[in-house]
Image (cartoon, rainbow, N blue to C red; front, side):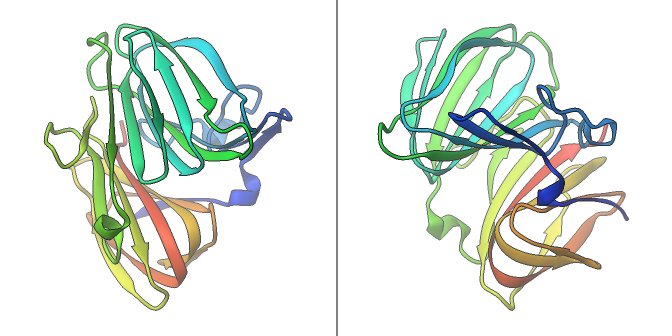
Length: 236
């Protein structure tokens, strides 16, 4: 088993007033050659956006983009004609493919929004762009990992153009959960959204992350009520 530990306090940080952003990997003006990516996971941004503010229309291509609202509501518009609002318990997945433009704004005029935006390099380039969003209830995640993103098309998960899997679980302190790598050659990036957990000899607190590869499975011991995201991605 190989590991890399990323402390929350050591993430890149940029506060633009309307946007308070933390970057797990090099992004925009933040650059750390030791944190350019984890396998094919390229971006994990933890963003807080002020009321009524957001990202104006901008382009993307050949990237798989998954957005997870943690608090608040996010308004989305894109060049494919999709217009919608996503809330906590909903997940948005977009294949930028051959190219799209979109905008994202805090839907509220009074409350901040906190969201995770995650980019994964695609398996196939220049596919037809695609957008989807779906609700996943807390009941799906209590005491177990619920797969929310996978490289299969079904009614139970969001499809991604990569051999990658995203899973979220909510666990009580004192519990343990085993995680099995979903695809040969993949590694797992374990991100603690809330709470605390222990993996091997690493104690993970809120927003800490541990990358794990060259193993088939590992155990997570939950030391404080926790919500945990696992991003299971090809390492090359």
